[in-house]
Image (cartoon, rainbow, N blue to C red):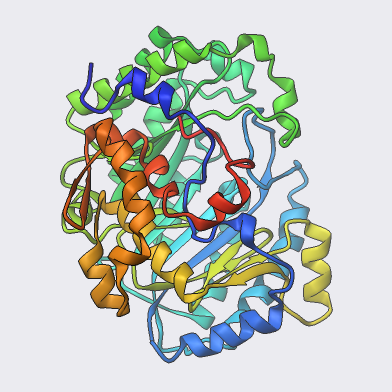
Length: 458
């Protein structure tokens, strides 16, 4: 048994909970937060001159993957993407109007959907728009990444992306087993994935990430172990191994999956244990939650130094950034506020046609929200908490403010998930898998509303 995996503890703490890419979570976003509120935050953010992180959502896919819960548009009509890019340019231009053009873009991420749905020429035009309005850090300093469906690109396309400025790629692989691939309508042979990953390495991409999913139909502990073994052989720099959440009432495509083909809870736990063992035995470091990285990866360096961060793009080494989101459903994190664009394409288009920003909802953080976000970030990213730092930084008595939370942590400490020493907390190996449970103790909204509306922590 790996030190990170304790089946009894996992069973005891199995529940639903947020992934904490934000705090407060999106459940707390409200339509009382308007485009004018977002504009005010954009303007006020210039005072700090923080670096910028940009997220662009490209929602299109030619084929539906049955497991997917992303905000996507399934079409083979690429003219739809051309129309969308026209609106996206207006979205970028209007938000950039309120941003000091001396501020530097240190991080860029294209997500989807399938960002590689659009052509090389459209990628170039989109980069021209971005460079028209923003100043980018150089290749050595910045992290500029794109999610890639290996079925949609060749080496020439990858080379074009590298020329534009992308220096990191994330490949959606999920599983190499042909039966599983067929069951989820995503057939991509190992050989094609291996070839495109090798091309990325040859082209000088600084980091290659891979997504796998456990709990898919027809998966077994043995079959997924073979997928993990094959992936270890391809040596990506980072891996995310996500738990498939079967929620067909929320995500219509999942109705195509036969629930009887899903692995049992016991089988899923065996898959998870095997995966952690295989990856750590191969030298990968378990960051926590469902992420792994090579020992020399910048994520590991920042976690050791206590400076790892988490936002809507996942784990990040850039903590002091304002995040600007563009495209349908995109979320921005600006000057202690969150705002989200309309999820529906017609509403997004209409807001832009009317000359405004397509803000659907958001939230302005209170001082207590800011403090609790800091605490939850430290737990989720750096696996520790020092109330003395919180007291000093925010000029509060954190020990008194969080006295009940400290009592609640003691229960988890008794089970070995963490250790408490005075006013400090350290997450132990078994707690890395259950890190969401630890963070949830400091989520005041969960206490008021219960733990519904979220995925299972394991």
